[in-house]
Length: 481
Ligand SMILES: Cc1cc2nc3c(=O)[nH]c(=O)nc-3n(C[C@H](O)[C@H](O)[C@H](O)COP(=O)(O)OP(=O)(O)OC[C@H]3O[C@@H](n4cnc5c(N)ncnc54)[C@H](O)[C@@H]3O)c2cc1C
Image (cartoon, rainbow, N blue to C red):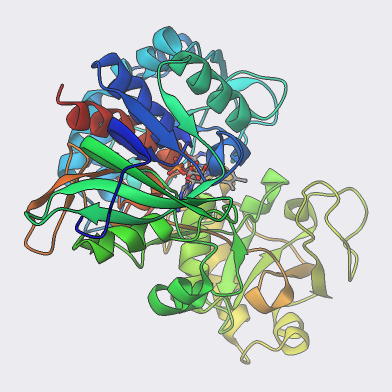
């Protein structure tokens, strides 16, 4: 604070970053009567949120779930998320997120004007059409279907265009002219008073320094750090070189400026890795194996679990063994064939009439694939997957000739990665220091923070917890929580 000679701008609440978390924070801070300024380094609102597919994780019995005939409860949603988000997930955040999920849905619809079409899409991944509801985290697959009643919880806003863009458009519309905006301004550091309270921020706009005094607090909603290779190398070296889910602005600047002010970080090595073995859906009849020809996961689960298990458990050395029907195209299985149905080019690299020939030609240890296929096929005759518990609807014996699709990281198949960790915050959006105490005047939300997901992810949790805890941070900073 002693370094600041004059303030360029004076406000109650300064929000750094105008993506979904910043917009939600601004809506609540202004509603609570706080003078609010949103600062963004870009020329307008949007951030990675506007680039996204728009799926939001909501449940506990939303009107869309009920209209599509799915029963869900807060308890089932909570039990599932605690199991799916990793052994060290933040249960307090999950509890409040689930408990208020239906009212979060209503806020999106009634306060922000977001529309959802009450139709269910059975395809894995984001629905290609306008349907809202879809599975996004392996809720209906082993092991989660054993612990909680499965329900689809992905809610994609209705639009013919990009749902992430539409979501941001509605949030910006809901905010109206209630908050001041300062674009093209990159915030570089926080201003801390002698008593340790965060009282403002310093940024740079067209080469000039801008100093912002924030009487009630600063909220950091500046995105994640997938664009910062140094941070990736430090916290998740396996992800360096993987495909990035995020924009250039996800450079970790929000995390680093808060660390400089004494903030603690949490789950900073947590990452979502997507590896899609579908479409076509029939590929789920195949079996995923590692370089030793052994299975390591049920193929019908969420693609984020498949990707994480493949990269972190198997070093990205994985293959899908298919037969003609599970390969899923009409022509006879070729030696090299781009998959025209998906965006991902996946190829059958080897075909053989027996498992033994296949392992010899594709380079698996002798006997390995043969043993795996033998065991799998023996029980598949009864519709059972005794080792990895794939759902019976995807289990049947694979019939020769067999093919191998190369899903190795080194083959160029995308392993899409999204950082999940960041600043340690509590359920009020307050940023905590290493002792677990709130840093006065400092709040954060979205991918700048460690949110619901820890070492386990479900699509829709980033927009979901970004907006939910963004709202809470906005209320807390404005003094209305
Ligand atoms: C292709 C794609 C699809 C995705 N699909 C989904 C999905 O369906 N569901 C889901 O939940 N998630 C999805 N995600 C992830 C999700 O979009 C992000 O995790 C989420 O939008 C993060 O929101 P945020 O508000 O934290 O950050 P952002 O939306 O990125 O907003 C951060 C803002 O901060 C600004 N900023 C950054 N640093 C500074 C600074 N120093 N000074 C000033 N301003 C700064 C940026 O310009 C940006 O506008 C997807 C991502 C991508 C790329």
